[in-house]
Length: 485
Image 1 (spheres, one colour):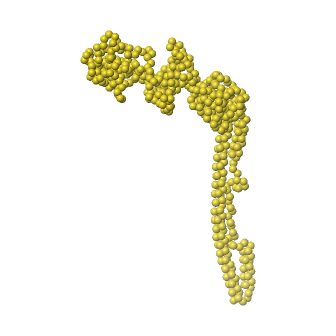
Image 2 (cartoon, helix red, strand yellow):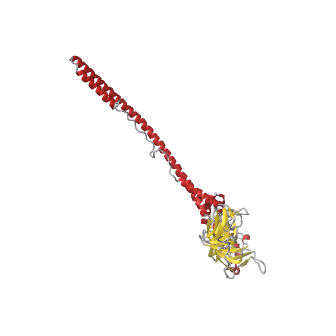
Image 3 (cartoon, helix red, strand yellow):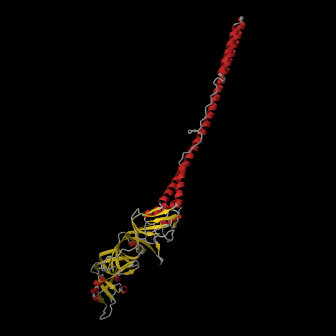
């Protein structure tokens, strides 16, 4: 399972027990005893998991061109140290400038208020009909009244009393009839006026509602248009702003795209976006500190006057102030790894040096191995290293290969036996405990529970006590109750 023991500064218990091993079964002289017995003692036991790893930087950001253009100026070279916000390069892009100009004009047009021409702002309103209340004009009414008055005056001049009375009665009746007709006509006129005004009121309401709905629809359309043009304007402004490339954090510069040690390539996605949105994608990739290798340039030369396309990698900034390790731990061991577990690291590039590290996180996404099993990513913080003679080791670079040895369990004062004393029996771990002495010595089968499992020594957390004697060699030949010979 890829487990090894680190014994620097420690003496394995198996050596300490050498003087206590006793040959049993009548072996003499130079004969090798079939069974050897040792005593259970306390010792330091460490369980170590080994895994391949790669050195990584604290953060890596690949900064890309937000639009098509040419490199107008470069302020840095490969290997330069830069500070956050420092200008690294400028790109000339007439196309981006023209898009910004068009976006501003479109936004101004969309921001103008909606106009309904000559229609009143409050909608259409029709005037009420008002027919003459008496059915006749005022002049005609006055003329009719004068005619009745003349007729009555002429009738009064008749000498014959009976004729005069009959004539005046006829005039009065005619006038009464005229007034009745006039009142009826006035009522009809009033009813007609009310009916017409009701119809006009309904028509006016419908027209006003229609115009109000039209006004609201136009306002909604205008608001949507303003939102679209505002978004387009911001994208165009961001693109033009992105033509001045600045360092997102302190670090070391590599022109173009760097490879390795940086994690997922978020910036590469910008090359697949429209130019108006590329700057926003690059901004996200840069601020996250995780834009990685690869790019539209394909490793092309970065120099003043070189044409670039949207998404082309211009500069990569790597923060090496803190180095990390990304290890692939086998599935059989990963459940033993926890945050804070210490580790020792050896680099292929620095022979004879050991670096200290500590686990900062354990991933849950499996990675298919070449042998059919899976491994899981474990992230560590890499510390300083020293050579075996005590000299300081140089700081590694991102992308270097390493081997980590994780101390997943450490028992400094464990009840321990040599690993050879443990016999696996199905799911059980068994130790043969010695009862009696000399020819009377017999083996007793004892099921134990193990703790830290080192390469030479194993911790027994349950089933044995210090001072007991156990079979440490030839355990697989021992049988219950038989003499140890």
